[in-house]
Image (cartoon, rainbow, N blue to C red):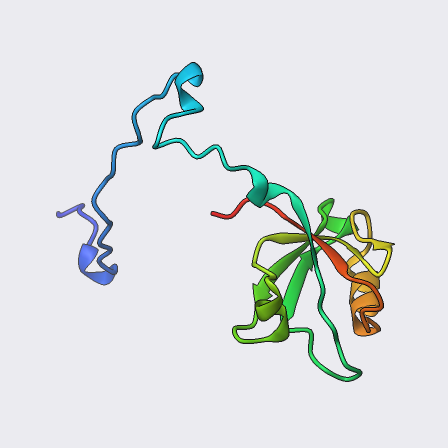
Length: 131
């Protein structure tokens, strides 16, 4: 009796070649090392001005909120939308919109706030790390 699993019923998956991790760089050498990125300004909060006419789409999707114990994050930016042209990126955290703090807010309240968003003031968007 053959006890082997019939692998013909399973899809074949091809994986990319393994890449070794980069070589260790001692902390005291990282500041001036060409392979070590010291540019951290990409992680600082920035202000994005996005004007939304009544009835228009925002051009992005969100996820997160108080129930998930996370902030509000941009999950998708529609290509060639006003949000895309304004510099909004997937993975950005929305910190505030029109002086409404979004760091500890329920998702349903965010949807309401964004639905009424006519952008009287620039919106503060804090970018987090990108993969």
